[in-house]
Length: 207
Length: 207
Image (cartoon, rainbow over all chains, first blue to last red; front, side, top):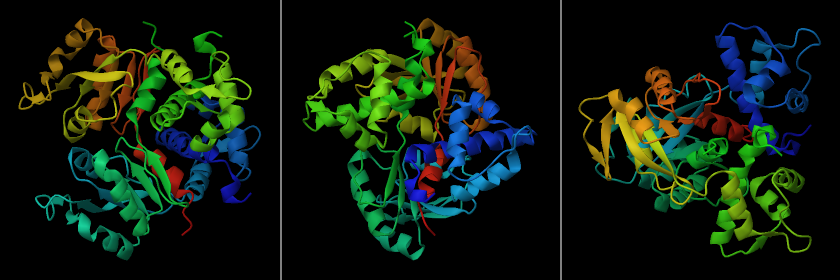
């Protein structure tokens, strides 16, 4: 099947499968089943089999999925079999937290560029990276062929930053600012929104 | 239908519908359709109608959904029609960012308590809140009847914090630390994981 014909909602579940498989592997497992995966993720085993069937034949009757092979396959499908350099824009509290975040390792992404518009921050270092001026961002990310960026600016700067990122060649933006971004066709945006998760859990609290 | 019989994956989409409806309302719209909502969210209109049908009859043939009524209904279903006090644990860079986050307003949650184990932070203020010692956390959240908490500690403290939160009566935990938490039955955990979103977008980048 052509990549673009697979529903995005299916694509959105693949990273969850990959994370669950990696945890199983770290726990020492070699094989798993759609049933076990489904129980861990709260997704039906039929849904998991159907999602994976878009991309090929995985798993065998009786033995289930070979975890290492399925991880390899999913990493390839998700383009997580390489390391994408990521630009991080907005080096306030959240930006610092993301620059130090330990969850990126071996999962396809590494922050390679930091930008802020505050003159007192420009030139400072976080780990081995120097904070660059937002004024040079567009040229800098174009030169470095950056395709992935994270926005950790205040809400009122986020759209301007997004426009500059797209002008500089970025195709995927992870937005932490509490605002809906508008981008041109072909550019993907995902929004980190804690309230979406809090509401999903509050549903279950009987008070 | 009994609340607990509705699949969590359906519950997980309701906050997305609520957010999209609120945006439509802010843009001045009074009515919308499952088709319009679906286009905004990348979810099929049939799925939206099916999800909502678990909770009652919404929308009319011809006019579609009355946005204000559907917002009211979803806020009630998600228990976002009140304001949940939230404990935030771990007041590092990320904790500061969350304490200042502008996205909670009018969405059902407000941070009312801050905790850290670092003696140099305890007693400091963020906005009107004083950072309390992690040592008093369990008693303090129990007294304040806190049911919802966010963990923004380093990974190696997160499980200990989660155990104490659950002991103190917390039923829903939003975890920012890059670690899988284990909790007792009846306690919900959601994990903010930027890589899940980055992988979903990287799928579409042809390189």
